[in-house]
Image 1 (cartoon, rainbow, N blue to C red):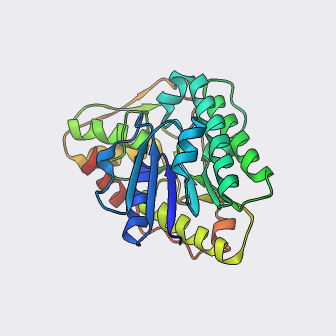
Image 2 (cartoon, one colour):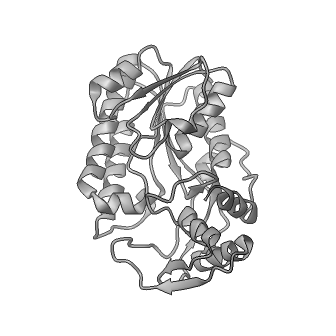
Length: 297
């Protein structure tokens, strides 16, 4: 794809796997991460990797990290429902100010920018603290798409999962998987009928890197692409399958829906833009995904 790549949030769940993939392909990778959610242990040792610990809102840190890069993947954000709702103000600041700093760096370097947004921008309006996250991601999308000087790809991932994903932020699958492994009750918010699709992180990276490579070759300037699986499953069914696969006697318990979580009854990606350029078929079915998450829970 390129010789030198910056990944903001590169020590996180998705970012570290992207770094591994690019390093394996012979790229030089610089990671900028404040380690509030990521871990240096997730990154491989090697001469092609440079790691800078810093806040993406710090324009000087971003400027240093982006020196001589040819492409920027901007993943740094606040991760997980619990983290978002615990501090909505910080959530909005990290997303907006961080994206502004990264965009300035891309403009200074004249290099393409791949911005990882969120599936939540496709939801209807919210009223609680999660609206801060969705609004900030929408604002960040508008910011990067509104400039006319560097190519931009906006990626909207839908429920990306895999081994090693932390439950600290309240992500639904690792939270349920951790309870299943410990033989504890799996708490499902509401009636459990809300549906989601789950995409393995390696399938996300397959799709994203192929799409970005194709768009760069074609000289595209502005693209928004949603990436996810298209096979919805009820959260209650997911919990039952995890309990069964874990084999620890865990039971599924339904609780009152949390007003702070503001769960949507349904969320499904539109793969039209992706499949117009990439022959995308997820390699991982749901049960193998659940086993993978159980191993790392």
